[in-house]
Image 1 (cartoon, one colour):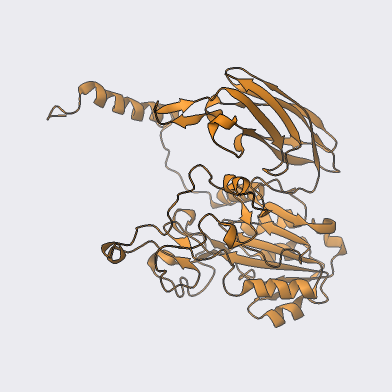
Image 2: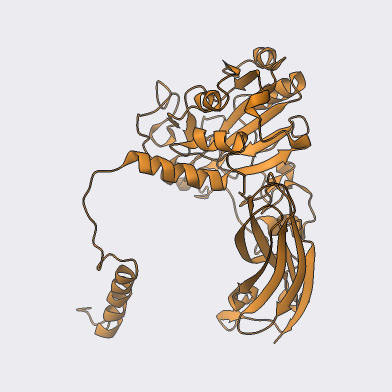
Length: 429
């Protein structure tokens, strides 16, 4: 500013943005109050968030929810599920109350690669919900022993994990530590096998057809075991939807290989080191050259079948979509009816997608809106989702701005990116 390169008006504008945000978020009117942290309230918040985020990927023959009154023996297998659940690294990791559940912490890892396990025990959560059943634990380190523990049990619950962190790329989407072999062995020994995944990303599932049910629990947090227990036993009806696509094979990925030599770890590749940069290697492991074909758009454009699509998630009830009407205007409105056709209350995330005119040059649909509705059994409700015009626009480099391409837009509505029973066309200018 003293050099005259920044005007007072520009500086005032930057300060105004900061102050506006502070007032909008309540920092000025409601300043921070010092108090003693309530860990139990934090546990409840963590549990509720996790309950809403768990995704039911498979549920053959209504294997879930479990009925505690009908269970005599339960086998709990794998992933230190006797004592804890894993946390993601980097910004996904917070220090758990009670400390790392696995001793010694960070075994085999360097400073930023340390695995933290929250002391939230799935074994204890299952025992608490089925107090009359005999619940046995097997560490899942030996496929034969795990299969033996599962055989004859009324149900076998296998926990599997893949740790990940920011600042690194996974070498593979394969579960580490030979967990695929363990899951396959358990499922072969017991047809009533349920798999609970603790991952921060998609994984391949060569055993996907074998277990009766699959839950994606992600990195479950401080009270993750109770959240998983509530979903397994039906206290909570799962409503989570996938925020990414689970591919059938790594070969279907836009970039199935990394461009820099991986470090010694057998399941991830960290960022390139300064020494690697000095040798002319790129600072990142992947060159992202797929343009707008990111995520589910890649699989759509390349017509690749997937294991589980973006936006997918099952429930203990069922839903029906009907009566789509699309109204043009400043905000395009998609109005439709959602009916809970099943036997119990549930929450459904209804998703709205759009196919742009051919002139836009995007031969794939894009998510342009969604809403979450809680419905009682047999309840029917009409809902309207407003679509911001920017979500229907493309970026025009020549104009250096967003442009709505004139033409016909196809609006699709349903429960996932590949389950869209409703379709309507609207002409926009």
